[in-house]
Amino acid sequence: MTDLLQLPPDPIYDRRRTIQSMASASMGRRKMRNQVFTGLIVSCLVIALIPLFFVILAIIEKGIAAISWGFISKTPVQPTIFDQNNIGGVGNAIVGTLIIVGLAALIAVPVGIIVSIYLAESDNKVANLFRAAIEILTGLPSILLGVFAYSYIVLKTHTYSGWAGSFALAVLMIPVITKASENAIRSVPATLTEAGLSLGARSSTVVRKVVVPAAAPGIITGVLLALARAIGETAPILLVIGASLNYEVNPLNPMPALPTTIYNYAGSAYASQRTAAWGVAFILVVLVLILSLGSRFIAARMRRERH
Amino acid sequence: MIDLVNESKFNRRDLALGDSPKAKSDWPFKLVVRGISVLFALVIILFVWSIIHQSLPTWKSQGLGFLTNTSWAPGLNQFGAAPLILGTLITAFIALLIAVPIGLGTALVITFLLPARIRTVMTSLVELLAAIPSVVYGLWGLIVLVPLFSNTIEPALQSWTGGIGIFSGATQGLGLLLAGIVLAVMVLPTIVAISRDVIAAVPSELIEGGLSLGATRSQVLTKVVLPAAKTGILGAISLGAGRALGETIAVAMVIGSSPEMPHSLFSVGATLASIIATQFIDASAPQLAALGACALILMVFTASVNAVARSLVRRTATVGA
Image (cartoon, rainbow over all chains, first blue to last red):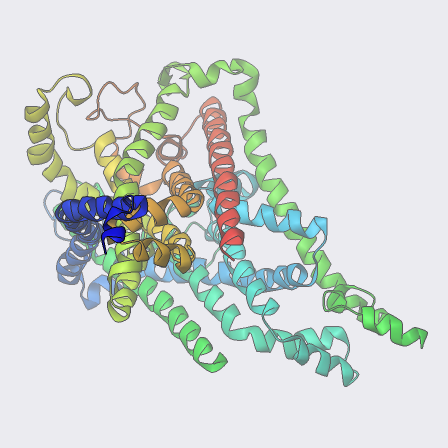
């Protein structure tokens, strides 16, 4: 017993005691810091959601008030000081947007899918460079596509036109479709393609009848996302589509569209037109939501089928 | 036997375009796939060329002086990009100053604090923020925020700071500060989404190691998770910066569209992108060339920022995997 007591003090034991006492002394401080930090990041989340809440609130509150059957079917009327509330409707802009975006999809969907087939099946330097260029294109401001469409279509045809807007939107949509579709094609199991080939099918037949159908949900998700983005884009079409007060179905002529209507009405001197801008915003956000929820729904179903 | 060896080298990649056994009968398909791809590549090249081409007269007449010239006055045929470049950088800086800390905090909460079900809801809400079109943010800024800023927020800022330096001048709502704040709302979803991905890729061994040493959650998040995800977070910030530099319509609606040298946060101004939106239609020939030059500067800015961002994000993705 006495021997034990006479042993020299254990340095490790001492250090452990020191650390323990420091830890318990700092426990309160660390707990408090933890709580402050947690509170801080939770308030970040709250702050992040505040603008969303107010934007949605404004769109619903002011937008629904503006919407009526006449609003979505009539053509616009320029209000005067004597007749400030007579602004007509935005029916022609709805039709214009549907035509411009529809035409853009008509170009972008086949081109996007075909380019993605090329990218999914090639891994050489040229393909990698092409893929990088497409990715950079995604990050460029969309107004640049408006400048592009202006110098190659509006200047050459000497007129603003819906189709120039479709062209700009198509170039905007293709990278979105290509990326989603390339990923979808790459994740089609090799056994499927091999089975097709082993049956003696041509590789083009296998791509058309096996690979693309198997990748369809992913491709459709990409197409819907691209549409959701294109339908709300203002910058690329603002410079090239011109405007019209009438229903216009010929894309070779100047056309009105929903986003540009918001842009033009937002700064109007007439309260009635500013209210109308909220109505158009409501229509536009509903369209965007339908498209993005649709793409989400398909993506979720696809994931469920996989597992 | 020789055939078998060749078959074993057969690669899925060769499927559409390579030398498959029946490649000869596949030429129309290959032609279409390659032809359309080449066509789209040409469109991209044409796109870049069209911007360069349109800006050429400006570079010829002004050279690099265009970048430092401080007067943009179409009426006097004076075109200098300095106020626009400054406006672009200032608004993007304000946006990042606000959106980066809030975005990082949000990403941390979504990844580490929320139960799975609420996490999905919050993620969808943040995505919804990204889905709202730019012009709708512009409308909101113009009609809801402008009165709020000119009557309440900006006077309050002035009385706190004494109204000197960057807080001097008339409070009109429209201007650089409001544009920066609207931009912050718009780049927030990008920053949250990307930084959430890179934070989620931090190996759980690191986090568990930290916790097992007795570190509190805040210590683990600030001293383990954030440093480990540093590169990817930088990538997320650069992607946000790319968006902030190029955002057009919402900024054009709330910045006051007046290309003059800014002297305070409340100054009206213009950015490289917003000036194209507001002055392109009805522009004279030299003005079109100057706007083309603005477009070219914008393209170089955003393309390089994006290229850096993508390589940063990709680097973390491969390290994490």
